[in-house]
View 1 (cartoon, rainbow, N blue to C red):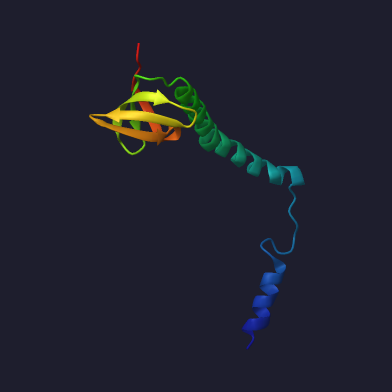
View 2: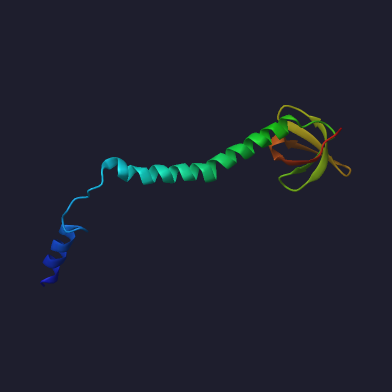
Length: 109
């Protein structure tokens, strides 16, 4: 049963034999700040840019524009209200939320 006290002594010493780290506190924080900056540039910034573009697209939407919805329906905008859009596809009319418009394929001149 000599192994139990031996493991206790090894774990108590720590990874460097009991010596403390020589790096200053700010040097330990810098990698985390760099990681956060890279994550912001790679993930958050492009998404914000995409949402801004989508918002301007929805504001510029008008009757006669050909659109594609998030469910894949292709149609022409008949009328626009504050939150709703009436869409005509073939001989069917749909009333959808503006947020369901995914893309404008053709603008009415």
